[in-house]
Amino acid sequence: MLERFLNKTTFASQKDFIENLHINVPENFNFGYDVVDAWAEEAPDKKALCWTNDQGQHIDFTFADIKRYTDRTASFFQSLGIGHGDMVMLILKRRYEFWFSIIALHKLGAVVIPATHLLTKKDIVYRNRAADIKMIVAAGEDLILGHVTAALPESPSVEKLVSVGPLVPEGWVDFHDGIDHAAPFTHPAHPNSNDDISLMYFTSGTTGNPKMVAHDFTYPLGHIVTGSFWHNLHGDSLHLTIADTGWGKAVWGKLYGQWIAGATVFVYDHEKFTPADMLRMIQDYRITSLCTPPTIFRFLIREDLTKYDLSSLQYCTIAGEALNPAVYETFYKLTGIKLKEGFGQTETTLTIATYPWVEPKPGSMGIPNPQYDVDLLTPDGRSAEDGEQGQIVVRTTHGKPLGLFKEYYRDPVLTREAWHDSIYYTGDVAWRDEDGYFWFVGRADDVIKSSGYRIGPFEVESALMTHPAVVECAITGVPDEIRGQVVKATIVLSKEYKEKAGEALIREIQDHVKRVTAPYKYPRIVEFVDELPKTISGKIRRVEIRDKENK
Image 1: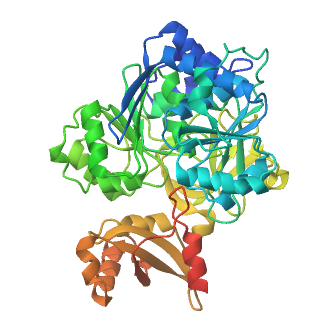
Image 2 (image 1 turned 45 degrees about the vertical axis):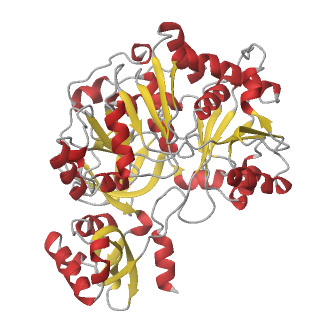
Image 3 (image 1 turned 45 degrees about the horizontal axis):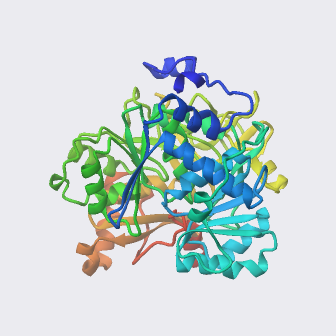
């Protein structure tokens, strides 16, 4: 499959990668037809999806199965009036019906809007009205169905509601009954052009209403690098990315790049994350490749890994937030596997990463993906020198790179703010070392300016995470008359240290940071909390901590 889209499919070095990576983009590319159906014709019995849940159910789907089910789903959706350009929201958790639905909607040329099951009525109303959503397909659970139903009176665009069960209340259409009785699928003559919108995410956002990030139909091809050259997948890989289907991380790690590479996607549909259960899944199903956010690895390394046979696990990648070096070192010591970090946004595909041929530097994001012309810009608009902090930007002088978003839907002002003068501004700050590795500092708004120093939250958080008392932490700046700002640490303590919370532990933690990193970065204010405020996607809301402090 890779040969259809790449002139060269293996690379020996970063130099080779930069000089020879070229992705061929077919006219009117459609992932449903050009990848899923192509696999079904080329290797119908090849396993595409290995799905299991916490109730003991297990189903394997071949590519022939996926083609058959997605054709039925597409026909069913057609019967409900869904076609080119129609907006459809999927609230499907980790149910296998997500894969049927998203591919079917691609085949119809519709717009897929994945959403988390954590949305409330207010969230759903906002999304329905902002995007004129026509149909919602949801997991049939009381809470989800209740929020969606409650949102309907304020959602005039919504015409159809589909439940995948087990509950199918009045006013909802039964998904499985629909696909079981669907007519033979009639392919649209021209389902899409390359620049049509195929996928849209509402970003979780740490401030303001979510933005609508729109991607075109070529977006899956941007994830060739994600699947084949970051996750390092091939035809015999069984890959697990831990992510709910409502987040962009799901299509990063549970669909596009993985299936183009010919790998099997493993899905564990569970209600509550338990490190022991996840380790048992890796052991029992012989997972070969794993990608998770740093938080998951922090929990995994606190388990007794000697109780599990993890010998099948060959490759591990990490994204979502910056990786603390202490987590890297501990996981490497326990497993012998070097975590390969990657960086990207909802607006992009993988932008910076540590590839198989690149030796990782613990705490570094890695090296830019050749798809993107990545630079670091200082506040005065010049390219940062090595060792100097700057905002990560993507230059688009030669056109929109494959994988970069199309626009913030219906918001040209916001689009121009982030993307103007042929430069897309990510809003993230980093620095580059003399070897070309990028090191994350923090969001541009989160950088602390204290006594003339610029202090990135991540570097202080990394130092804090090496203290055994710290499970999670967030660094923010607090206004100070003398220094401008001082560093504040908001910390979740481990069970063993909760009873020790007090001035003595604060001083111990402050002294620890002084030893681990530059002394001027130590937190002058330390607060212990039971939990950190987070977005519904699990990212720390430092703005909420700052606002609380200012009040």
